[in-house]
Image 1 (tube, helix red, strand yellow):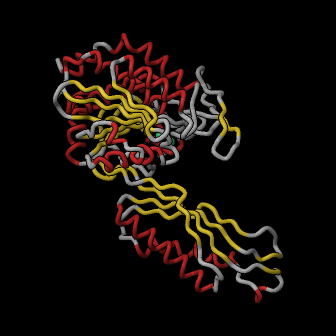
Image 2: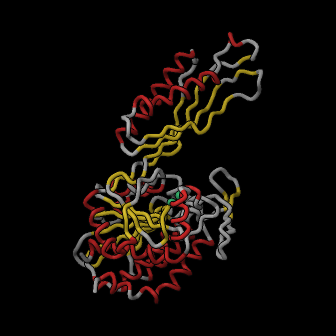
Image 3: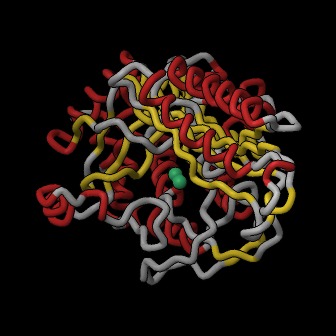
Length: 416
Ligand SMILES: [Zn+2]
Ligand SMILES: [Zn+2]
């Protein structure tokens, strides 16, 4: 009998408590940087399973370490935070909680990205591993990261001395509910998720009366020229076939028709799968904006502010090969390869800071029949997805699949 099957023999006994834990987290989601209750729940659970727990890393971050003899160190990561949405899933355990966001507004809160399920799967895996210490060797590290949705939490944990406070692992692993059939696990080697940068750019003109443009520098015309010219980055500067996106999602200037404004604000989103392409696009944006300001006779240098930045998630080939083999052995035809995703994650900042390789994978959340029908009609993008107020993964089989995937991957190192 495979070690994972011996360990999973204890799953049914664990299941009611795991489901209750998940529903409790789902009922009480917390915004990024405010995950105090969630962190406490996780801490209590890990302590009762015999993990050494370090809490308060990078704000509310929690790490549980179970040292179990000599052997490799495996770090598994999940996220603590939820989103400012009003849940419309219709679940009996739907959230009605509200919170005060960073700008002082009262907002509803919803676990609409599935981080609650990731945590419950992690805690379930942790308990099963703690209950079967005689079946594996090494160090199991469970990491609960704050503020994934804002792209800040991983870096904040690293900056707070993460790897001085916990052992440096040999490998790092993470999973996420992603588009796919519930009960399936999918990964891929190489670039998995895009790097994403959001940049706010302020360009300056000289305001005046709309009837006397000769006395002004019109920031609306300047912004328009910049927007058009930015379209040449992907079409003329990036290697054909490389995935690259430059979107101007917002452009604001002026207040009324007969007044020329003093400035314009552009908000850009930039995505790519390679650090070379990413840097090339960021450099091109700077160059184009500065040159267009000069061409317009702008009286003041433009200002650039990065509002968020996610690195590319680039799965290590060797580690991913080992994980995929473990998935194939355990899940059979429920394990598969996943296409590249254009969404983004900050997970990789943790293994990158430790200098260790990593693998990330997706667990599906859509009912098989619904998914296959949508796929046949070419309407996969219409299915309810992460960040929708209606998002709600079916608790089962997702919880069990998430638990099994963490176990299978961790045991590929801890009980090979
Ligand atoms: Zn999310
Ligand atoms: Zn997420």
